[in-house]
Image (tube, rainbow, N blue to C red; front, side):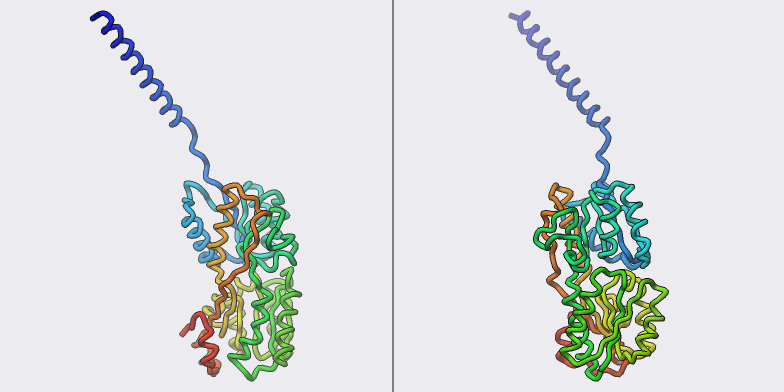
Length: 336
């Protein structure tokens, strides 16, 4: 009996040793396996790194809220055109060579460049003019292809420019508009402004600009046309040049309306547009869905539901304008 017990104990010892050795081997094997590399996300923006710091921060916050850890699970390969949209194709080619899992874009021009450079790579538009008119999507509800994300509803916004300028400065008779000639939806935007001008019996004049070096000449032409105020239509490189545009316009004592809150923060009388930071936070949702297997063409393109009206009261006082209480009540924010 004792012999049988000793044999049983020996067998159990051998089994425990074998199991321990197996576990140890498995542990060493696990340690020897290379860690999974973080996912590479492309980032193609028409403006400068400095001007884009807020939107990049919003995008990262959106990803963090969805559980993504920067560095461990994803890294962002950034490219900035510094307001030179002609550089976007080259920058998009650079990104394509890095083989990102997807590319996030900041404008219609950036989206177009990314689509040409990386036609098989999913693209998430964080903001864009009408994607159907631009040829990026078959429809908002069912984009098809490799592009999805968010639209700017810029035509609807631009149609309000004349109304808002007149609410702030009722004596205006002629309004000049800066238009980015590289914007594929510029004709649609101009027609929106013309419709509003016709309703309010105001003359409008448009100056197309292809690059930063043309801005001051265009503003001089608007002055010769008798412009009394300035509307700046949606444009990536206009965002990069807004300080200069506002400075020149204010030197002519023009009330200015721009398409994002940054314009009013820079000194424009008014800004009216989408909450861009909210758009970039929402873009993270699309990135999350695509990285988890969704097809971009199956994800409906969203239109923003929140629009901001910001009034710079300091500029109003400098221009000797009294802002009507009705307009102040409509404002999302007043800058004192």
